[in-house]
Length: 354
Image (tube, rainbow, N blue to C red; front, side, top):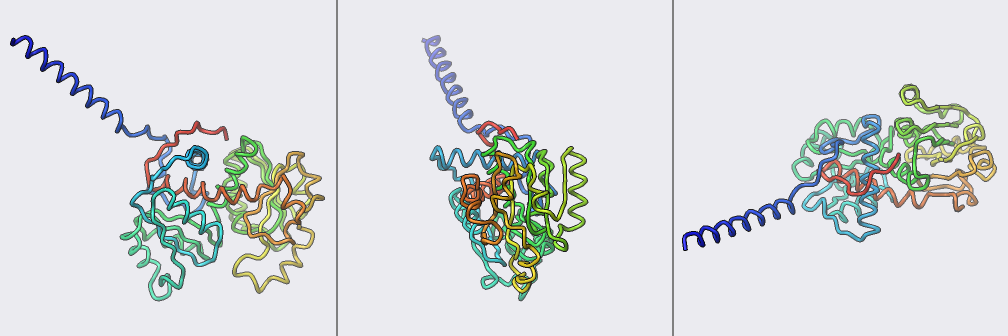
């Protein structure tokens, strides 16, 4: 009888241990990625390494595959909230961020200057500290890069640049994801920017070389990129073995390029300069004549909204135009940024070849 009881006790103990082991396996955390971005700010792509930017694109591809194509529900941001500060109006930045954060189970709070006192009746410092006690991250679309830097310095939560006068990093992530999907790899591509030396171009210049992409830039005289950004881009080109080429001739910049890119010639806040700028940019409209000197497999990007003087309908609505795929990818890339800065999520999709 004693032997029988011992045998029964051992069997129950073994079953209990086995059950415990199964439960442990079920609740085991996924293996962490070697790239850890949790609690970081995203103010400029200059502050991110090649591997860190690639990781964001990897997470974006993963989320797009799992949510859009496989229909999975990933409430990775359940219980989290996001303060969305918008000094400038927006279609893509607002919709991609608001719907993307909600899709992941979080609560986005849209705030304009009519809703909060940013820098007017309340200092940016005080706003940053208050938001840090009530939300988990801040996305700010502002005029001045310095305002973002103050927010990041004073906040104890991640701050993301939703656009500033100096850069538009979340737009460029969407551009790169689009090109990755189309070409299968970014390394070896030649990008041709034809237009204003603006904030969007700055973000390309601070990141393209990190993927092994050459960059041709055509801007009218007097509208060149910031000299400091040029210097940094030149340093990156030397470091990564890529080519950076600046000219005032659009056809020269387009020659042999895989990707033709432009943007508005008149950004928000520059409306009074419209006539001057339209005159200065004559000859910069991208047309099929421009595309004839590009690579046979050329594509076209524009971050939108688009005006006809920047690119004609034939190019904009052509099969080679990726602008609407590019617009959709704003959602998947900003979701990747939020997930990466707020959680320990590791992508399940095999890492793309960049």
